Length: 335
Image 1 (cartoon, helix red, strand yellow):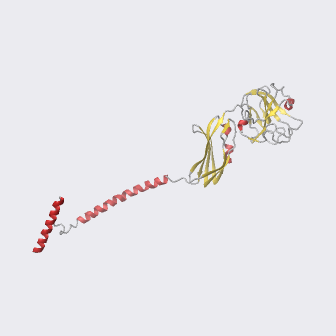
Image 2 (image 1 turned 45 degrees about the vertical axis):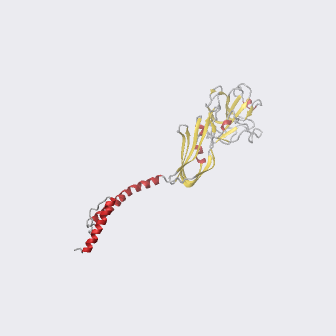
Image 3 (image 1 turned 90 degrees about the horizontal axis):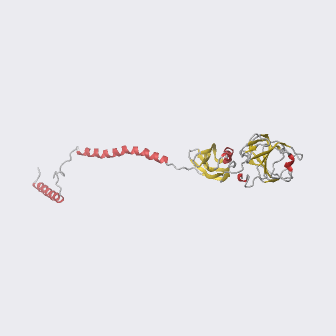
């Protein structure tokens, strides 16, 4: 039982709450809630609700984590670094011209694979060479013999070298454009490198070399006519001076220009044959005064008439002046 004082105090509290409720526009549903004991069932309900929200967040979280990890893995930084040292590549060459690649690639990782390719303007591989690597260095010379620049037709190309390391990272180390121009004169063999050049010192011809030696070609390699012409000499040449040309073919190209192909293994043409640029006229050998398989090639200027059959006396007459075949208008484009 409440005393008179307690009732009075309670009535005042109710009146105060009522006035405040009217002031804010809300009427309490239970004026004695402060004195009532909260229902035991209400507390668990609130706790259940509060624990339900985190449960939803915990379920969604694991789904997002793998996506974030996969995205991070796909964006791993390529740490492969390639440095080039003394790399040589063509800028402008002529049809049939060979080019010697050189240089070194240096990497911060051990390299696993090198792909060297020649790509045309349409993005198609004309030449592609795959090489294994197991070092931080790669010598480009190792693929030089497999990159046949002389087989390319006139046009624009791109020389590319792509390196891949042991971690799977790849990087294009070299990507350079170059042009193959059409030439009026043809390089007489497929490939090869220059040995003795014009006027280099040798033991014959008064210590001078009146032509060029093309080495690095195997016995039996085809020899081509450098331009249209007529066969005016095709037999073994002997010389009392010991400077024999061995099996020799001479073509006359008009305007007093003759081309000489010496030390051949086999002769494929006879006197009087008409030939076109690129026709096979002989094969590479080491006949006559020679120390190994190579082609000795000369261009000579003489009278505007054909040689008289296989008369070897014409070969050493002063009326035939040897000149450097590597002049720009002839084979000079191949340098």
